[in-house]
Length: 403
Image (tube, rainbow, N blue to C red; front, top):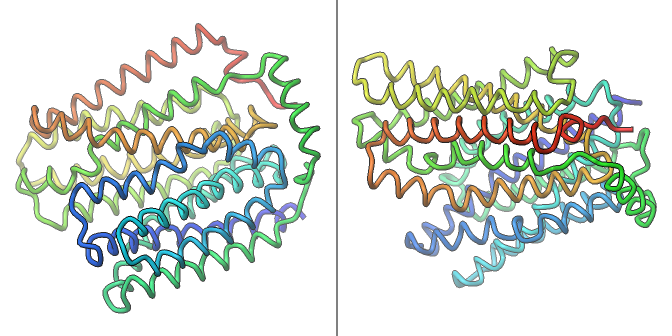
Protein backbone atom coordinates (compact mmCIF):
# COMPACT_ATOMS: atom_id res chain seq x y z
CA UNK A 1 0.00 0.00 0.00
CA UNK A 2 2.81 2.42 0.91
CA UNK A 3 4.49 1.93 -2.48
CA UNK A 4 1.19 2.25 -4.32
CA UNK A 5 0.53 5.55 -2.59
CA UNK A 6 3.79 7.13 -3.80
CA UNK A 7 4.56 5.57 -7.19
CA UNK A 8 1.81 7.52 -9.02
CA UNK A 9 3.00 10.75 -7.37
CA UNK A 10 6.57 10.10 -8.54
CA UNK A 11 5.57 9.23 -12.12
CA UNK A 12 3.13 12.14 -12.25
CA UNK A 13 5.87 14.48 -11.03
CA UNK A 14 8.16 13.25 -13.83
CA UNK A 15 5.56 14.04 -16.51
CA UNK A 16 4.59 17.38 -14.98
CA UNK A 17 8.22 18.40 -14.44
CA UNK A 18 9.26 17.40 -17.94
CA UNK A 19 6.33 19.32 -19.39
CA UNK A 20 7.21 22.36 -17.28
CA UNK A 21 10.80 22.53 -18.53
CA UNK A 22 9.75 22.03 -22.14
CA UNK A 23 7.10 24.75 -22.10
CA UNK A 24 9.51 27.12 -20.29
CA UNK A 25 11.98 26.76 -23.15
CA UNK A 26 9.20 27.14 -25.73
CA UNK A 27 7.97 30.34 -24.03
CA UNK A 28 11.49 31.82 -24.16
CA UNK A 29 11.82 30.91 -27.85
CA UNK A 30 8.41 32.32 -28.74
CA UNK A 31 9.29 35.57 -27.01
CA UNK A 32 12.64 35.87 -28.80
CA UNK A 33 11.76 34.63 -32.29
CA UNK A 34 8.03 35.12 -32.84
CA UNK A 35 7.58 38.39 -30.95
CA UNK A 36 11.15 39.69 -31.55
CA UNK A 37 11.44 40.68 -27.89
CA UNK A 38 14.03 43.23 -26.80
CA UNK A 39 16.05 42.95 -23.59
CA UNK A 40 13.38 45.04 -21.84
CA UNK A 41 10.64 42.78 -23.20
CA UNK A 42 12.52 39.77 -21.80
CA UNK A 43 12.62 41.50 -18.43
CA UNK A 44 8.82 41.81 -18.56
CA UNK A 45 8.65 38.13 -19.44
CA UNK A 46 10.68 37.31 -16.32
CA UNK A 47 8.14 39.28 -14.29
CA UNK A 48 5.24 37.38 -15.88
CA UNK A 49 6.94 34.06 -15.11
CA UNK A 50 7.87 34.85 -11.50
CA UNK A 51 5.56 37.47 -9.96
CA UNK A 52 2.35 35.34 -9.83
CA UNK A 53 4.13 32.74 -7.72
CA UNK A 54 5.55 35.46 -5.47
CA UNK A 55 2.32 37.42 -5.07
CA UNK A 56 0.09 34.43 -4.29
CA UNK A 57 2.61 32.25 -2.42
CA UNK A 58 0.94 32.37 0.99
CA UNK A 59 -2.57 32.05 -0.44
CA UNK A 60 -1.56 29.09 -2.61
CA UNK A 61 0.00 27.32 0.36
CA UNK A 62 -3.02 27.84 2.59
CA UNK A 63 -5.30 26.40 -0.09
CA UNK A 64 -3.06 23.30 -0.28
CA UNK A 65 -3.12 22.95 3.52
CA UNK A 66 -6.87 23.33 4.00
CA UNK A 67 -8.13 21.22 1.11
CA UNK A 68 -7.52 17.83 -0.46
CA UNK A 69 -4.05 18.06 -2.03
CA UNK A 70 -5.08 15.64 -4.78
CA UNK A 71 -7.96 17.88 -5.84
CA UNK A 72 -5.64 20.89 -5.81
CA UNK A 73 -3.28 18.98 -8.11
CA UNK A 74 -6.11 18.05 -10.50
CA UNK A 75 -7.26 21.67 -10.71
CA UNK A 76 -3.70 23.04 -11.10
CA UNK A 77 -2.82 20.52 -13.82
CA UNK A 78 -6.05 21.26 -15.71
CA UNK A 79 -5.50 25.04 -15.48
CA UNK A 80 -1.85 24.71 -16.54
CA UNK A 81 -2.90 22.72 -19.61
CA UNK A 82 -5.40 25.44 -20.50
CA UNK A 83 -2.80 28.13 -19.83
CA UNK A 84 -0.26 26.35 -22.04
CA UNK A 85 -2.64 25.97 -24.96
CA UNK A 86 -4.00 29.52 -24.71
CA UNK A 87 -0.46 30.88 -25.23
CA UNK A 88 -0.68 29.51 -28.80
CA UNK A 89 -3.41 32.05 -29.60
CA UNK A 90 -1.52 35.17 -28.47
CA UNK A 91 -1.17 37.67 -31.33
CA UNK A 92 0.39 40.56 -29.42
CA UNK A 93 3.15 40.58 -26.87
CA UNK A 94 0.88 42.03 -24.17
CA UNK A 95 -1.55 39.12 -24.68
CA UNK A 96 1.38 36.71 -24.61
CA UNK A 97 2.59 38.11 -21.25
CA UNK A 98 -0.92 37.91 -19.78
CA UNK A 99 -1.31 34.27 -20.80
CA UNK A 100 2.17 33.42 -19.48
CA UNK A 101 1.28 35.03 -16.15
CA UNK A 102 -1.94 32.97 -15.96
CA UNK A 103 0.05 29.83 -16.81
CA UNK A 104 2.55 30.68 -14.05
CA UNK A 105 -0.23 31.23 -11.51
CA UNK A 106 -1.60 27.74 -12.18
CA UNK A 107 1.88 26.20 -12.03
CA UNK A 108 2.50 27.80 -8.62
CA UNK A 109 0.13 25.25 -7.02
CA UNK A 110 1.87 22.12 -8.29
CA UNK A 111 5.06 21.93 -6.19
CA UNK A 112 3.38 22.78 -2.83
CA UNK A 113 0.59 20.33 -3.59
CA UNK A 114 3.04 17.53 -4.48
CA UNK A 115 5.07 18.19 -1.32
CA UNK A 116 1.91 18.20 0.80
CA UNK A 117 0.55 15.04 -0.81
CA UNK A 118 3.89 13.25 -0.43
CA UNK A 119 4.11 14.17 3.25
CA UNK A 120 0.50 13.15 3.92
CA UNK A 121 0.80 9.77 2.22
CA UNK A 122 4.25 8.82 3.55
CA UNK A 123 5.20 7.25 6.88
CA UNK A 124 7.87 9.18 8.75
CA UNK A 125 10.64 6.67 8.05
CA UNK A 126 10.14 6.95 4.27
CA UNK A 127 10.06 10.74 3.96
CA UNK A 128 13.78 11.17 3.24
CA UNK A 129 13.79 8.38 0.64
CA UNK A 130 10.74 9.73 -1.17
CA UNK A 131 11.94 13.32 -1.26
CA UNK A 132 15.30 12.01 -2.51
CA UNK A 133 13.50 10.21 -5.34
CA UNK A 134 11.63 13.41 -6.23
CA UNK A 135 14.99 15.20 -6.28
CA UNK A 136 16.36 12.54 -8.66
CA UNK A 137 13.49 13.06 -11.08
CA UNK A 138 13.75 16.86 -10.85
CA UNK A 139 17.47 16.82 -11.66
CA UNK A 140 17.02 14.28 -14.46
CA UNK A 141 14.30 16.40 -16.05
CA UNK A 142 16.50 19.48 -15.68
CA UNK A 143 19.22 17.72 -17.68
CA UNK A 144 17.14 15.98 -20.35
CA UNK A 145 14.14 18.23 -20.95
CA UNK A 146 15.96 21.36 -22.27
CA UNK A 147 17.99 19.24 -24.71
CA UNK A 148 14.96 17.35 -25.99
CA UNK A 149 12.86 20.53 -26.02
CA UNK A 150 15.49 22.44 -28.02
CA UNK A 151 15.75 19.62 -30.58
CA UNK A 152 11.95 19.38 -30.87
CA UNK A 153 11.64 23.16 -31.32
CA UNK A 154 14.24 23.05 -34.07
CA UNK A 155 12.37 20.41 -36.07
CA UNK A 156 8.69 20.92 -35.17
CA UNK A 157 8.43 24.52 -33.92
CA UNK A 158 7.48 26.01 -30.57
CA UNK A 159 3.72 25.59 -31.09
CA UNK A 160 4.04 21.83 -31.45
CA UNK A 161 6.31 21.70 -28.42
CA UNK A 162 3.70 23.52 -26.32
CA UNK A 163 1.07 20.97 -27.37
CA UNK A 164 3.44 18.14 -26.34
CA UNK A 165 4.00 19.91 -23.03
CA UNK A 166 0.25 20.07 -22.42
CA UNK A 167 -0.04 16.33 -23.19
CA UNK A 168 2.78 15.50 -20.75
CA UNK A 169 1.15 17.61 -18.06
CA UNK A 170 -2.13 15.79 -18.70
CA UNK A 171 -0.38 12.43 -18.29
CA UNK A 172 0.97 13.67 -14.98
CA UNK A 173 -2.56 14.57 -13.91
CA UNK A 174 -3.78 11.07 -14.79
CA UNK A 175 -1.02 9.60 -12.62
CA UNK A 176 -2.02 11.80 -9.68
CA UNK A 177 -5.50 10.27 -9.90
CA UNK A 178 -4.06 6.96 -8.70
CA UNK A 179 -2.32 8.35 -5.62
CA UNK A 180 -3.97 6.74 -2.59
CA UNK A 181 -4.46 8.24 0.81
CA UNK A 182 -2.53 6.78 3.70
CA UNK A 183 -2.32 7.88 7.30
CA UNK A 184 -3.68 11.43 6.96
CA UNK A 185 -6.94 12.40 5.35
CA UNK A 186 -6.40 14.78 2.46
CA UNK A 187 -10.02 15.84 2.55
CA UNK A 188 -9.89 16.90 6.19
CA UNK A 189 -12.38 19.54 7.19
CA UNK A 190 -10.88 23.00 6.45
CA UNK A 191 -12.21 24.44 9.70
CA UNK A 192 -10.60 21.56 11.63
CA UNK A 193 -7.29 22.11 9.83
CA UNK A 194 -7.40 25.80 10.67
CA UNK A 195 -8.19 24.96 14.31
CA UNK A 196 -5.24 22.53 14.47
CA UNK A 197 -2.93 25.09 12.90
CA UNK A 198 -3.98 27.60 15.54
CA UNK A 199 -3.21 25.06 18.27
CA UNK A 200 0.28 24.49 16.87
CA UNK A 201 0.99 28.21 16.71
CA UNK A 202 -0.13 28.58 20.28
CA UNK A 203 2.16 25.75 21.40
CA UNK A 204 5.42 27.34 20.23
CA UNK A 205 5.53 25.83 16.76
CA UNK A 206 8.89 26.18 15.01
CA UNK A 207 9.32 29.49 13.22
CA UNK A 208 9.70 29.28 9.42
CA UNK A 209 11.80 32.46 9.32
CA UNK A 210 15.24 30.78 9.76
CA UNK A 211 14.39 28.28 7.00
CA UNK A 212 13.26 31.01 4.61
CA UNK A 213 16.34 33.14 5.33
CA UNK A 214 18.67 30.20 4.58
CA UNK A 215 16.71 29.42 1.40
CA UNK A 216 16.92 33.04 0.22
CA UNK A 217 20.65 33.38 0.90
CA UNK A 218 21.44 30.06 -0.77
CA UNK A 219 19.33 30.98 -3.81
CA UNK A 220 21.21 34.28 -4.14
CA UNK A 221 24.56 32.46 -4.31
CA UNK A 222 23.87 30.88 -7.71
CA UNK A 223 21.30 33.23 -9.18
CA UNK A 224 23.57 36.28 -8.90
CA UNK A 225 25.84 34.84 -11.60
CA UNK A 226 23.83 32.12 -13.40
CA UNK A 227 22.50 34.36 -16.16
CA UNK A 228 25.91 35.95 -16.64
CA UNK A 229 27.86 32.67 -17.03
CA UNK A 230 27.94 32.60 -20.86
CA UNK A 231 29.27 36.18 -20.92
CA UNK A 232 31.76 35.50 -18.10
CA UNK A 233 33.19 32.44 -19.86
CA UNK A 234 33.32 34.25 -23.21
CA UNK A 235 35.20 37.22 -21.74
CA UNK A 236 37.69 34.87 -20.04
CA UNK A 237 38.43 33.08 -23.31
CA UNK A 238 36.56 29.82 -22.77
CA UNK A 239 34.94 28.11 -25.77
CA UNK A 240 31.16 27.73 -26.20
CA UNK A 241 31.04 24.09 -25.16
CA UNK A 242 32.29 24.85 -21.64
CA UNK A 243 28.94 26.24 -20.47
CA UNK A 244 27.29 22.99 -21.56
CA UNK A 245 29.90 20.98 -19.67
CA UNK A 246 29.34 23.00 -16.49
CA UNK A 247 25.54 22.72 -16.65
CA UNK A 248 25.80 18.98 -17.30
CA UNK A 249 28.28 18.57 -14.43
CA UNK A 250 25.97 20.34 -12.00
CA UNK A 251 22.99 18.30 -13.20
CA UNK A 252 24.94 15.04 -12.94
CA UNK A 253 26.04 15.97 -9.42
CA UNK A 254 22.44 16.68 -8.43
CA UNK A 255 21.21 13.36 -9.83
CA UNK A 256 23.99 11.27 -8.31
CA UNK A 257 23.64 13.09 -5.00
CA UNK A 258 19.92 12.41 -4.85
CA UNK A 259 20.45 8.75 -5.78
CA UNK A 260 23.01 8.44 -2.99
CA UNK A 261 20.53 9.93 -0.52
CA UNK A 262 17.94 7.36 -1.63
CA UNK A 263 20.38 4.58 -0.70
CA UNK A 264 21.32 6.34 2.53
CA UNK A 265 17.76 7.09 3.60
CA UNK A 266 18.39 5.93 7.14
CA UNK A 267 21.24 8.39 7.68
CA UNK A 268 21.52 12.02 8.70
CA UNK A 269 19.33 13.27 5.84
CA UNK A 270 16.42 11.46 7.47
CA UNK A 271 16.62 13.21 10.82
CA UNK A 272 14.96 16.43 9.72
CA UNK A 273 17.09 18.70 11.88
CA UNK A 274 17.60 22.37 11.07
CA UNK A 275 21.36 21.84 11.44
CA UNK A 276 21.34 19.36 8.53
CA UNK A 277 20.34 22.10 6.10
CA UNK A 278 23.17 24.55 6.76
CA UNK A 279 26.09 22.36 5.63
CA UNK A 280 25.27 22.06 1.85
CA UNK A 281 24.92 25.86 1.34
CA UNK A 282 28.18 26.44 3.24
CA UNK A 283 29.94 23.92 0.99
CA UNK A 284 28.52 25.66 -2.09
CA UNK A 285 29.73 29.08 -0.91
CA UNK A 286 33.26 27.71 -0.42
CA UNK A 287 33.05 26.20 -3.92
CA UNK A 288 32.21 29.63 -5.36
CA UNK A 289 35.34 31.06 -3.75
CA UNK A 290 37.31 28.20 -5.28
CA UNK A 291 35.69 28.81 -8.69
CA UNK A 292 36.80 32.44 -8.51
CA UNK A 293 40.37 31.35 -7.81
CA UNK A 294 40.25 28.83 -10.68
CA UNK A 295 38.96 31.49 -13.10
CA UNK A 296 42.00 33.63 -12.26
CA UNK A 297 44.27 30.81 -13.36
CA UNK A 298 44.63 30.30 -17.11
CA UNK A 299 46.25 26.87 -17.03
CA UNK A 300 45.00 23.96 -19.14
CA UNK A 301 43.41 22.12 -16.20
CA UNK A 302 40.96 24.87 -15.20
CA UNK A 303 38.05 23.50 -17.29
CA UNK A 304 38.32 20.13 -15.53
CA UNK A 305 38.57 21.87 -12.16
CA UNK A 306 35.49 23.99 -12.92
CA UNK A 307 33.51 20.88 -13.92
CA UNK A 308 34.54 19.23 -10.65
CA UNK A 309 33.37 22.26 -8.64
CA UNK A 310 30.03 22.38 -10.45
CA UNK A 311 29.59 18.63 -9.93
CA UNK A 312 30.10 19.01 -6.17
CA UNK A 313 27.76 22.02 -6.13
CA UNK A 314 25.13 19.73 -7.70
CA UNK A 315 25.70 17.22 -4.90
CA UNK A 316 25.25 20.00 -2.33
CA UNK A 317 22.11 21.25 -4.04
CA UNK A 318 20.52 17.80 -4.00
CA UNK A 319 21.37 17.37 -0.33
CA UNK A 320 19.83 20.73 0.53
CA UNK A 321 16.66 20.00 -1.47
CA UNK A 322 16.10 16.72 0.39
CA UNK A 323 17.05 17.89 3.90
CA UNK A 324 14.94 21.05 3.63
CA UNK A 325 11.90 19.07 2.42
CA UNK A 326 12.28 16.53 5.24
CA UNK A 327 12.71 19.34 7.77
CA UNK A 328 9.56 21.07 6.52
CA UNK A 329 7.54 17.85 6.46
CA UNK A 330 8.48 16.90 9.99
CA UNK A 331 8.30 20.37 11.51
CA UNK A 332 5.35 22.05 9.75
CA UNK A 333 2.90 19.18 9.59
CA UNK A 334 -0.30 21.22 9.36
CA UNK A 335 0.87 24.11 7.20
CA UNK A 336 3.41 22.33 4.96
CA UNK A 337 1.69 23.62 1.82
CA UNK A 338 1.96 27.23 2.98
CA UNK A 339 5.61 26.94 4.00
CA UNK A 340 6.47 25.11 0.76
CA UNK A 341 4.73 27.76 -1.31
CA UNK A 342 6.32 30.66 0.57
CA UNK A 343 9.73 29.03 0.11
CA UNK A 344 9.03 28.86 -3.62
CA UNK A 345 8.04 32.53 -3.51
CA UNK A 346 11.28 33.47 -1.75
CA UNK A 347 13.30 31.65 -4.41
CA UNK A 348 11.36 33.42 -7.18
CA UNK A 349 11.91 36.80 -5.54
CA UNK A 350 15.65 36.16 -5.36
CA UNK A 351 15.58 34.96 -8.98
CA UNK A 352 14.07 38.32 -9.94
CA UNK A 353 16.49 40.50 -7.95
CA UNK A 354 19.80 38.61 -7.83
CA UNK A 355 20.68 38.90 -11.56
CA UNK A 356 20.45 42.69 -11.29
CA UNK A 357 22.86 42.64 -8.33
CA UNK A 358 25.16 40.27 -10.23
CA UNK A 359 25.18 42.50 -13.30
CA UNK A 360 25.95 45.52 -11.10
CA UNK A 361 28.93 43.74 -9.50
CA UNK A 362 30.23 42.47 -12.83
CA UNK A 363 30.20 46.04 -14.13
CA UNK A 364 32.61 47.07 -11.34
CA UNK A 365 34.74 44.03 -10.57
CA UNK A 366 36.41 41.24 -12.52
CA UNK A 367 34.48 38.00 -12.99
CA UNK A 368 36.75 35.93 -10.69
CA UNK A 369 36.45 38.59 -7.98
CA UNK A 370 32.64 38.53 -8.23
CA UNK A 371 32.63 34.77 -7.58
CA UNK A 372 34.97 35.21 -4.61
CA UNK A 373 32.89 38.08 -3.19
CA UNK A 374 29.66 36.14 -3.75
CA UNK A 375 31.02 33.07 -1.96
CA UNK A 376 32.49 35.04 0.97
CA UNK A 377 29.34 37.12 1.44
CA UNK A 378 27.02 34.10 1.37
CA UNK A 379 29.30 32.11 3.72
CA UNK A 380 29.25 34.95 6.26
CA UNK A 381 25.49 35.49 5.91
CA UNK A 382 24.74 31.77 6.29
CA UNK A 383 26.99 31.43 9.33
CA UNK A 384 25.58 34.55 10.94
CA UNK A 385 21.98 33.53 10.19
CA UNK A 386 22.50 30.06 11.65
CA UNK A 387 24.08 31.28 14.89
CA UNK A 388 21.56 34.11 15.26
CA UNK A 389 18.64 31.73 14.61
CA UNK A 390 19.95 29.22 17.14
CA UNK A 391 20.41 31.95 19.74
CA UNK A 392 17.26 33.96 19.06
CA UNK A 393 14.73 31.23 18.19
CA UNK A 394 16.29 28.50 20.32
CA UNK A 395 17.09 24.93 19.35
CA UNK A 396 13.64 23.66 20.30
CA UNK A 397 11.94 26.24 18.08
CA UNK A 398 14.16 25.32 15.14
CA UNK A 399 13.38 21.65 15.37
CA UNK A 400 10.10 20.74 17.01
CA UNK A 401 9.21 17.12 16.17
CA UNK A 402 5.80 16.58 14.64
CA UNK A 403 3.14 14.93 16.76
